[in-house]
Image (tube, rainbow, N blue to C red; front, side):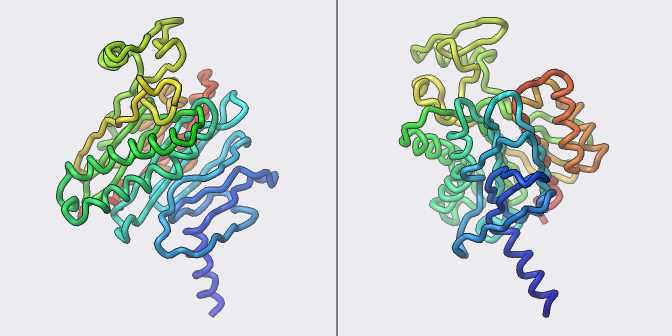
Length: 332
């Protein structure tokens, strides 16, 4: 009987909110992550009102003043470290067992700018909005990849629209992956990146939305925007170095939230995904990152090694690295 009580408490804890604290009992923030075992045991468990149909996605109201933390989940592991900014502006989100299907899941890595407001909002709402859009398609979308892609696209646009309605001047890049029916759907706005390891060989699944892309510069200029090149970096209106993001109300005439989406089937040669903010990719090559993860068996320690590698090479930006094991999401 006692063992059953412990098991039930453990299962409930995996689906409720954690108050994350470090070894010095300093608060990291509240995380909502489905099916997660934390690397560091939380000091206190916050139990919200029970809601059997609640979608667990995002990390609402996180206060990440702490320099670094890590999370280990059933299907993923993650390490994150704050850069030189006063407040950590990276975020992440996890949703598993979507609509009761163990092979449906959504993961996101988010890189905010101009404060944490947009990153927090995206972490809390992007997955929910994608799932709502899929549900509105009904059973027709089950075997229709185009409808799934439309749902992802709509989820990004709705998240952007709803955040802008709050009147907060902040923005966020985001990269997300959705697993459904043995297919992988990758979407991104900005310069967070998703890398697939296929038999140990790195395959880049996203294209950064930066002004170094001629098509993005032309799009902005053709819509009346000003693109300025200074110190080796292109910037929109002389300020923002990315061309797509959620938020950024003051630049919304040019900074769009339309994601680029890529779909591919999961096959037996697919090993794992690396999702990370640009704090990693500015200093670490994609194949180098795959090699590190492969050697250390997709562990939290391997994520931390990549974070430390970037910082040792002079990176001063926030870094978040998430690794996802793909075996669970293969088609039967």
